[in-house]
Image (cartoon, rainbow, N blue to C red; front, side, top):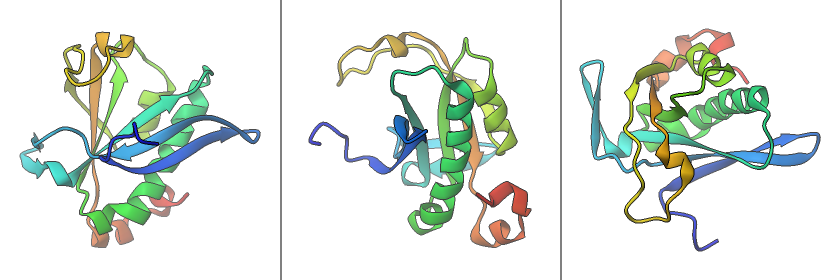
Length: 154
């Protein structure tokens, strides 16, 4: 698929009853660097969870799928790629299961973005809404071994 950006790293399908309902793409965001909790993270240490929902309003499934996808991504790709920080965005007018799922996995709200269209892509309605920016530090390999089984097990 020629139109998929080369910044994408991994795609996880969101399936229910053998039907593909959406996907979660882990990709490098267009961020040069970011400071969070007094630590500076460079662009190649930051990975974004970008969610794509396909034709169904099923928020609890999306929340559970993101949590599971995060576990898989961190376990299989995070350490090998040198990922230290995860970022995702949630529409600021949304208050539901996705926010609870993120907090349960150690994500923290780090402010709100200003709406704006991408200069290098077609305009999309979703970009007209402000979004909450959620961040999650990826523990070092030694920290992950000491983490509770409930936090990291699939």
